[in-house]
Length: 195
Length: 191
Length: 194
Image (cartoon, rainbow over all chains, first blue to last red):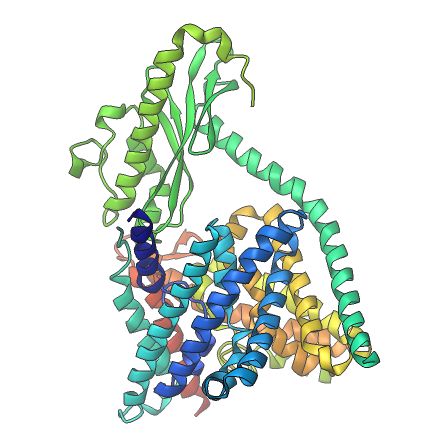
């Protein structure tokens, strides 16, 4: 029971309280870049959830069973970024061969994810916070969910904004930033939430 | 095939060279980093218990050493410990200096990333001086019936600090009152 | 003359933050105080200049196919160096910037310049390009951080600059303020362009 409660608390923290995009400022490029259409936001979100969970798993294993025993923790950044890059490649190849339908939906987003700082961010955070293996994986999953949630919300808002009459100078990026700011204000309401 | 081997080889060379350079720089910076951390803690200890000239470790709390400080006459000047609890959005760690009669001498917040402008105001000297001279029975925020006036808009941070210090004081009192007759043994314990 | 142009283009005409909207994560995350902004800018500029130097030197030896992974290794090495040196000599700043130092690796500005410029140009031009872009990034950070710190804390570089009667607009240094200030500044840039 206590285990479940811990998982629940972690989910709330990663999705709402410390939302990766709005509170930690991670993964802003896709958040602004891929939030113009609802379907592409959904596709990107799914791809990010998948890669973040995988990346959390593998980077945790590499840190614990390779970098720490060999005392080469200073290679963490290089090791993690290479792991993530090859992981993304691998996932892309596997999906392409085994699940063409899924590839069609996610394919274009996968290469973009390597340089998504949220993925490397969650990997390093897992180590800094000294999570156990299970919690590292779950943290990756929940962080991805939090990212997807705000990405989809944003896409919904921006689809409507297309039809709004805005001053010319504020169209596009500037208004997207303002909207993000309003969302962050709303998410600020979650902070301090504890279980 | 040969082409792919060459690709792998070039990448390997780059990585090996990079790792070598990093290992060298790491060997230069690591001792400095360790020394910095040690010095920062030592300075915090001196600051919260200025009368003490030497420190002996007596126990552990929050994975940090509890020290008993002695003044230049060799008499007990007080204790230091690190109080730590999760505040509003981060772990708040406080170095606490304690007088021999278990009152707070001085505190210093050594680690926090609370909300800037609200909880982060706990690092201000005006706030930290509120704790001076208080013992564990009044080490509560005003809302909980104690004597610590909360920072405006940051009751949770204030409460966290007060509670972590109260727990530490209780723990210290417990071990010290018990081990009083074993005063001689204590000095043998080193870090 | 052309070298100077490589230098100045990054500051205004092709400013990586305001014009190309690259590397937004660190810009928004560390701009809550001017001090952090300068530290982040300096770290990123160091990595930009040195990875540009290195990549333009070794570009002849790297087969096209493994271009990107090689660049990533080079960049990650310089990031790690910055990380270690900062932890040793400016521990307080290192702690404030925290996660965003290793994340310089995935900053699109750096890989972008390596791929688009240093991989195709000679050493001297690459150095100036790196410096210009780094300076542009730093200046953008300082502009945003100044606005946020002055409005949100009434301070500049930690010194009080506004009268005590000014009640700080706390929201400016909290997360939402970063987005709002950035959005308004981008709008302002658009206004100027037209």
